[in-house]
Amino acid sequence: MVIVEPLDPWIAARDSEDLYFNASAVAYQGRGVLLLGPSGSGKSSVALGLLAFGAELICDDGIWLRAGLLTPPQGAPNLIEARGIGLLNTGPLCPSAPLSLVVELGQTEGQRLPPRRFVAVDDEKVPLIRAEHGPTLETAILQVLRHGRGNY
Image (cartoon, rainbow, N blue to C red; front, side, top):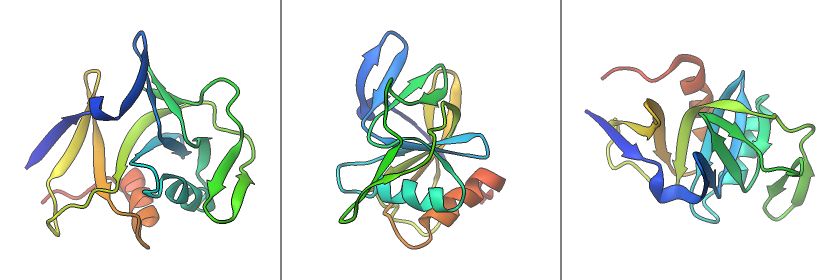
């Protein structure tokens, strides 16, 4: 089964065709990952874990989607929050990356092999993963980016 969902519930602001999200985003090998979820769901923690595997931070705690590209707000700091530790330097921010994967934290799939989910972005379908932050989430995200999901 394939389910296509809108991004509308997560949009915090609009500027013409540009969409702003209270989210974090990273790029891995040129592919952008949008990390959505309520406060405290682990967006920064997942981004930090992906940075440890070689991803680049696009922005923590606020991101624009412009013509399919994830871009940081003007003047965004190259910092990421590590809860209970503080703000950490990340090196230079990635200036933009095409949206390739959306991860919705704070949601769990009730099935061991959940339906394939996508979000509608313009005329494209972008893969969507719903998950709680757990010990294998970052590696699963990287595997999806490298090789996609299996068909079942």
